[in-house]
Structure formats: C-alpha cells, structure tokens
Length: 374
Image (cartoon, one colour):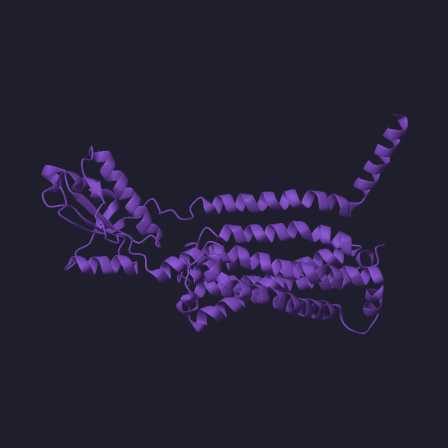
C-alpha cells in the first residue's frame, strides 16, 4: 500500500501543478453552470404571456355571467362581421374570435367556437385560458370546437412551417458550424506549435495581430465552407426529413433579405466560434490537448443553440449576448418576427466579441511562455 500511496501522491502533485490540466477539468462544470443558469432564467418566460397582458378577442353572444370574468384579462374588440375577425386572428392582429351559441347564458348548451392561431404564443395561450375559464366556471354540458370540418386553428402554412423550423434550426446551425470549426482549429495553431513551424512564423517581420487575424480569417473560411455545405444539405432535405410535414415550397416562404440575414448570422457566428477555439488551440501544447480544451466550449455553443429552440424573445437586450442573440435572431427569422434592431444587435455583438478574441490571440502570440511552453 505504501507504493500505491506514493503513486497517488505523485499523480496528485502532477495534476495540481499543471494549471492547464486543472483548467481543463474545472472549465466544463463552470461554463455549464453559467449557461444553464442563464438559460433557466430566460426560458422561464419563453412561450409565456406577460402577466399584465390582456388578450384581444372578438366575442359574440357574450353570456352576462361571463362578462365580468372576460373583462379582467381580455380586451374586447368590435368587428363588422365574423369573417373580418377571423382574418385578423389568422394575420396575428387579434388573439381570439369566440362565438357562443345563441341563448347560451340560459341553456348552457351547444358548441362554443373559439378560433385562434397556434403559431402566435399569445393567441395559443389565450385559447388555453378561455377553455380553462369556461370549464372552471360552469359544469359544462356544452362542447368546445366540436364542429366537424371547421378549422379552428387559423395558423397559416407559412407561419406553422416557420415555427417548426425555429424549433431546431438554431441548434442545427450552431452544431454544424461548431463541427466545421473544431475540424480545423486544433491543427492550425497547436499543430504548428507541436511541429515547430509556429516558431518560424513568429520570428518573421509580420506583426502578431496580423498573424492572428490571418489565421482566424483563413480558418473561418474553411469552417464556413464546411458549415454552409452541411446547412444547405439539411435545407434541401427538409421535405424528406419531416416526412412530408413540410413541402418543397418552404424556400419560397422567405425573401432574399431573410437569406442574406441568415448568411450574415452564420458568418458572424463562425468568427466567434473559430476565435474561441483558436484561443484554446493557442493555449494548448499539442493537438490532442487542444481538442480536450475545445470540447467544453463546443458543448456550450450547442447548448446556446438548444436554448434558441424554444423560440425568439421579445426582450431586445438578449440579442446583445454573443451567440445567444444569434440563435434567437435565427429563430425570429424563421418565424418572420425579426426586427432590424434585433438583427443588428445580434450580428454586431458577435463581431465585437470576435475582435476582442483575436486581440487576445495576438497578445498570446507575444508570450514565449504560451507559444514555446516555457
């Protein structure tokens, strides 16, 4: 046992004296804690309606005993006819169109018709609220939306498709781009350090920031090509992937401006990811160590994509957060709810962070301790 204890002390000593190894072990838990905490705080309100929000509704044959209940959380609208109200529900300008049967207040019988738009959170939540309200106030001998052949969910194919795409496209984009970056980042810097060619580059007259920028831009191009090819492949296969739930005309739902915004987001995201991976590669002694250091960062990137799957946010400040804002912006583009300000904030925050990371790499290139493992 004495020999075993000696070996244990030796390994513990080696581990705690190697700051890189300690950093590698602690970093994943720390990063996951921070991201999960942020995700939990933000996702608490994703898909929900604000407490002070009043559902907008068009109601016919309103029973007197329900007027007070509807008056608390609803703003009743007037329309010239029912079709105009349903058209506004479909367009997202009105949350609900509710039609009570004639003399419902006396008979409590018949079919209550509630038209809503499931692609809009407020409208969908309004439908749930009204259904629950009716079932809680009255022992219901009546039915809700029982009529055959009537489409009560007025969500259009375009909006429904957009909401479906928004549930997985941000995560898919982040995963594909991160995979492309992880394929080139470790070899480009840690690999050159390991082979000794980096030392030759460092003694040339080129400035360190120029070397860092050249490395990042070239790596970003390689990663972008890989990510774009995968992204295009997924887009083209969507009709088959969704088993016919999405038709082949999905591409026509989006304008050229939407596609340019997606491209801009992809470019900015690649720059951030490849810069972060390059920092880990610069810090590492070997390609193997670089891969180990990059792994937790890659997990965080994918988790941010998972967060954006839950839908776009109405909080503008969230778009300022690098990568997270890009995921939310991608989701907003898919659901046709993106605003110019949200897009600018999302893409600008990525470029700012990428610039800071490239600056950090240029300073790392000046450190003999980092570059020559001294």
